[in-house]
Length: 294
Image (cartoon, rainbow, N blue to C red; front, top):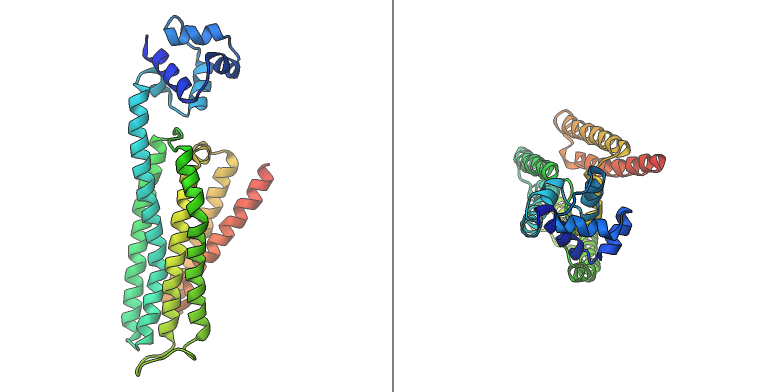
């Protein structure tokens, strides 16, 4: 049996399809599928492309490689990459908020403003570097693996679905605790000599950093389990490219506003808000463009 026949049989059985069911999807006869698997005949290019889409594999694997071994290797590599990317993005976003939190905490202890500015900028630079590295790595991975198989079992998905509401509740709970501290504003909380209310603003932002980190990590894990979405996103249509352009412009403008506000107007304490606003504008742009495309 040739590699194509072996791999076709492997993928068909993995999807729990009979030869008749596969033949029906491809609009060919059962005998045709049987001949392909036995190596008696070979599929034409149109059918090969349909098989690649159906089984979420690339043509090189379908025709030449050992599909079973490739599936195991891809499974391990994909899980490792997605976990690393998820952790890096979560850390990067949390660090951005942490920078503002440290600035407020230092101000609460009446540390000179120059020290706070230095700490804040150092943390922001670290976050930007993390985003650059993990962004490039993720783009390279997607170029090499534009289509993947669904490695995740139903048991894994069900277990995550049970954890997800708890994680969301925990994240929101932490943020609400921070808001409670922020609302008290030091009026009902003790302040030691030499401290001011900015310390509690910093505590609020620390809670936000933790809560947002949990939300991002859990949300990205949920997206990871949606393999169909991953495959769709790596075969972008004109609408997707337009969304990417608009979001890129919005976030570039947000970065320019951030640095101008900080360096020119010394508004480091509040200029970080341009990033969540930019994120909301990206969401609005995605909804509007997506609706027009439909």
